[in-house]
Image (cartoon, rainbow, N blue to C red; front, side, top):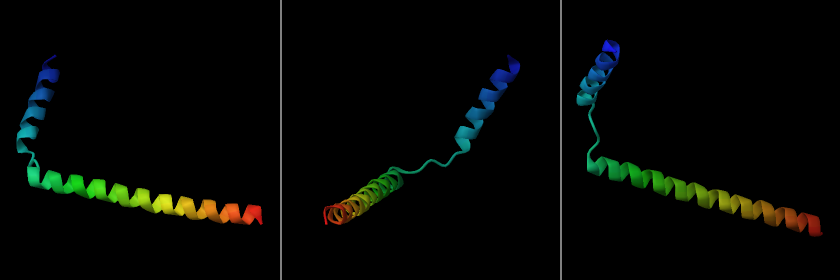
Length: 61
């Protein structure tokens, strides 16, 4: 039980040493993830459309 409390004591100590990101950094990182996800979704949608169209034309002719 003593090790249990020692562990959480050291966790609390380490959490005080962490440099947390500012709200501005968090917003920037969030927008980076969202915009990158949208760009990848559009890219894969375009690839899917082109492959689907190509295969449809190939199969129908």
